[in-house]
Structures are given as structure tokens and as C-alpha cells.
Length: 211
Image (cartoon, rainbow, N blue to C red; front, side, top):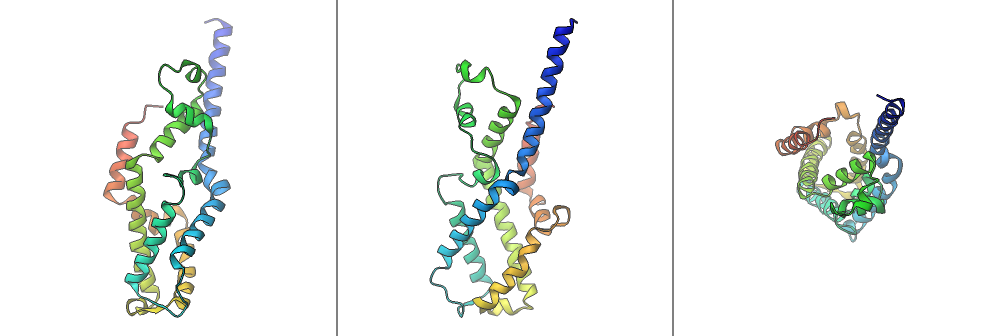
């Protein structure tokens, strides 16, 4: 092999590794950039659903479950379809062009990097109907577990009902449990053990090309 060919191969390998690192780094987009927007939109959804509620209003387990579900539904339907994906990965006009490019668009496809290819593929998965179904299943599972845990924490008071003022204090106490260390997080474990979630990711990994 000629030296120049070897150099080109090494450079290509280095670019691939760089692209891989860039892609892995994009996993931190939510915590570094997307979280403020997510929190703002979630607050707006909660404000809209709770509008007209008073601190003296009584909430039992059923009412609490339905209220949180309404907030989640409102949050998931803010703005354009799949708007919530913008919290998870950066918006880029080039990714959009690549996603809609046909095989005849040689000018667009000729200089596609591996990183751009991975981001387009990730966007396709996140905006798919199948992933949307998994998100809905996961939210329902976590909501069921959360309301159950809040009922336990209340000592049974939530079953008969408690004023919203007291309930808000209980909600605040439960918040840190949702963000607990992933390997020990009960809610993440609930999502991971759901059969439909397991099937989705099994099929996703099975269709991934070998590295």
C-alpha cells in the first residue's frame, strides 16, 4: 500500500472516531441545552391545566392521576408535532435536508459525514410513530407508579382526598425520586421492564448495522 493511501485511510478513520465522539456528546444536549425549554413548556402546560383550581380544592388518587395525565397530554401537544424532540437533540436545517433527500440528490449526499448520518437516523427514530407509542407507554407507567407511591407517602390520606395546598408539598417531596441515579431509579426500571418497550429496543438494535 502506498504511503498516501495509508494516510488517507488513517485520516478517514480519525474522522470516523471524531464523528462518533460528536454523536456521543450529543447525548448531553438535554441536560446542557434542552432542559430550560422543557421546564418552561412543562410549567406552561401545568399552569393551563390547573387554571381555576384553588388551594383548598380536594384531590384524591383518581383526580390527581387524571390531572397529571392532562398536563402531560398538554405538554406533548405544545407547538408542532414532535416538538419535544427539540429538547433531546439540536435542530439543524442540514439534518432536515438530509432526511428528505432522495438518492438522486448527489450534491447533498456527496459530503455527508458519519455524524450527520447518525443524527438523521436518530431523528427518524425519535419522530417515528413506534417511538411515540413507547413514550406514551412509559409516561403512563411512570404516572401509575408515581401516584401509587404518593398514596403510600401520604399514609393513605390521598385515597380519601387532601387539599391541593397539602398535595403540592407531597409532589415536591416526590420530585427528587424521579431524578434518582439511573441504575437505582425505580421509575426507569419500570420503563425498562415493560414488554412493549423491550420489544421496541430489541427490534431497534437488531436492525442496527454492525459497527
